[in-house]
Image (cartoon, rainbow, N blue to C red; front, side, top):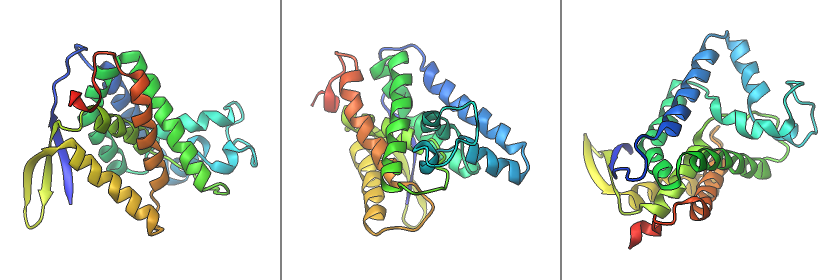
Length: 227
């Protein structure tokens, strides 16, 4: 229904959000590496480094002998199923990530991002306790960035490509754009959607991001845009 394009929210505390761009590059490099594999190798790579609940719970042995079970709570977030999966996640990270890195600082932002990935994975695990399918994708961690954004910059304008009949770019407050996105995740959880999308990971990431933003943000960065 709509696609975010960019926001009107300049950074004020850092000269360049190099952690955000580093995360974009890391996700792209991993996917390009995945893309060099035949389909069987691509799928097995997801099994090895994705987050499989029964592996993380140590019910089934870790496919990668040297990798601790808990490491998959992070590694899964750098894998993607296809180009659309990758680009959609990276678009949201690019639009909202620079402001959250600005609000938190470089090191705190990296820690924040990885923690959001972990909490998103744990939310998925809690609701899919016996699952043997791999969770992959940066969407849980990126949802954390969005959760922080809605808490810190709810009134910032986000240009979205809104489509009713024809696509029209419209500036709307972040709270509306991100609020609709969150409501969509809740809707699909409530109706019990069978689509292969980790709705609970998205919601876990949003909640983690909103909560972690409070202790991680700079003192001079006000909640709710200072309003």
